Length: 334
Image (cartoon, rainbow, N blue to C red):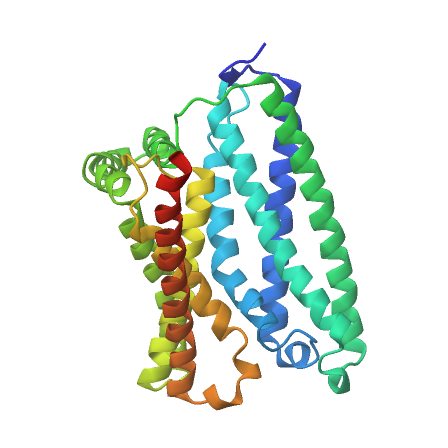
């Protein structure tokens, strides 16, 4: 018999909780070690995966993994041990954990490809061996946590049916009100949460793409500012350092948001321009990731042309595919 909520003490809750905590531990540890090895020259210069396209995955982890940890962590706080747990909430948290483990595994696969190709073999040494040993440990841990998540998700779905609510946005309001009740100066927090719920949640649901764009820009700005302040980037490289992470983060937020139901949009159907924009934000960075293979583009202008040209090509191809699919649909009906 399926149910819309899990009662207190259900064994499925305990297994799911173990999987969630294991995911958070893995993601934070992998993110911390990745950042440390990247920012330590003695380690970075002995890594087989120090160059693009493998380094693109490492760099994106700096923004994507903290975002996922925060998203999973704050919603997991609402999975209270002595309260009935909505199935929708638990299923969404488990799906977000699967995305986090998938991001870790994707980076690890890229690093293993670099190792298999023997890249930068002349720089290999004891530190390379140590990093490969750490990579073995993280890969095994990611596979193990992934299997744990799959088992927990399967058992939860077997006995529950997920309602449409609450989504992530609604639970953010719930968490804010919970904090306000426990905080000594909860009035200000309650007012802020109320303002968010009444003034922002509606526009976000009506315009999720615009909200994703603003979020992607906000996440990309610190990286751009660091390039300006610490490395003195000129204007063309500033444009590149902002557009590249912003594009990838926008595509990630839209695709992951659709999969995870970050918000329940008020759309009756997906706008036709949105897949085109997402495709551009995927193909542009994908083309840029292989910039080392195109010596002619190793200038500031060339790198921008590679990024924006790849995005334009992906958008154009998506438009053509959609037009062909639209033209073929009436003939199939006839």
